[in-house]
Image (tube, rainbow, N blue to C red):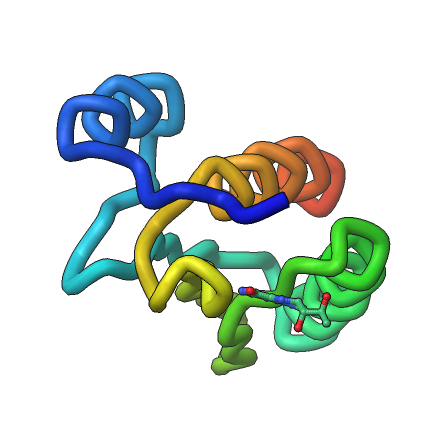
Amino acid sequence: MPVEPLSLKEIEDRLAELPGWAVDDDRLTRSYRLGSHFAATAMVIHIAQVQDELDHHSDLTLGYNTVSLSVNTHSAGGKVTELDFGLAQRVEELAQAHGAH
Ligand SMILES: C[C@H](O)[C@H](O)[C@H]1CNC2=NC(N)=NC(=O)C2=N1
């Protein structure tokens, strides 16, 4: 089933429920800070597991004590969709367990 791009209003409503996330240039993004580089690496592995489970994959960047995500939906022409917010919600849940903020 094709997934439709969200309207600006739909994006704003969803962003209001997800502090720390932003949409810029048709990409849903967030960066997290962790207590160590190893902790950040562990979080990347956990995100990769969830992304394979959802079959939806962000551009995922591991930095020094940081993890950054940037995602849109390729099959919707590179627009932001419900699938991107679904991934963001799952990442928010696991971020808490990793002590990311
Ligand atoms: C074949 C596979 O289901 C698709 O390529 C999936 C994989 N991961 C994906 N990730 C993202 N971000 N957008 C997609 O459209 C997408 N499609």
